[in-house]
Length: 111
Length: 115
Image 1 (tube, rainbow over the protein chains, first blue to last red):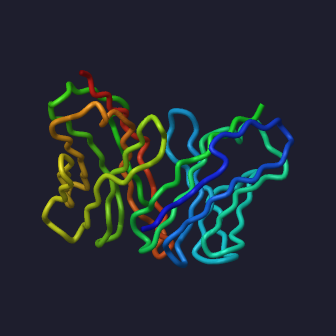
Image 2: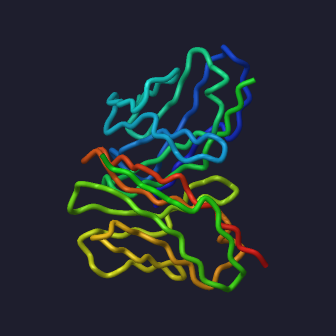
Image 3: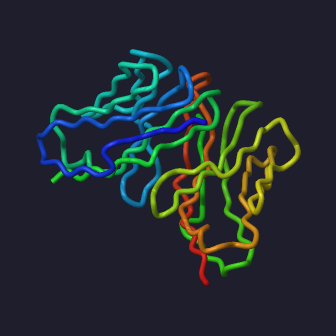
């Protein structure tokens, strides 16, 4: 069966520091991968998606970037965090381009 | 452009009773899927139920069922015999973007099940 992992689970970082969040999927090949951000009490905003290694599409302009160095690995990064980057970050995968399955999420607080 | 609207920010229901969450959407596609996701306090998003637009029969998963009205572009979720563990945010979602399989989510309905 497929599983999706995210780490770290929680992170507190100062403004201006770098960021790296990692997501890995097991039990599937060539999945579509997605990064979402959820602000407190709000819905999900799609940040990036990837249909293959090295293929990254951005939905909104922002301070963040994404990379997919391996088939089942998806990384969310920033060179310098802003206060507005605080939120709950969810990674998801999809096999058939329909339903998506989500990881446990990372709670990021920028201080 | 696709849109998803959930008009009930919060709802509450007594344990063992039935509750219906509303969702309306807009899409230019003829064949598509619709989803309901649940986000409990742990905040992990869990797929609850899926409906294929070309199927007239409403989807059912145990205590969860949908009322899908394609012409009205309505997709409501009914939870029967509500349990305390059903307390969560519920999001309606619609795919867009073709093969990318991107989802657009509604703003969510916060459901509280009271003992």
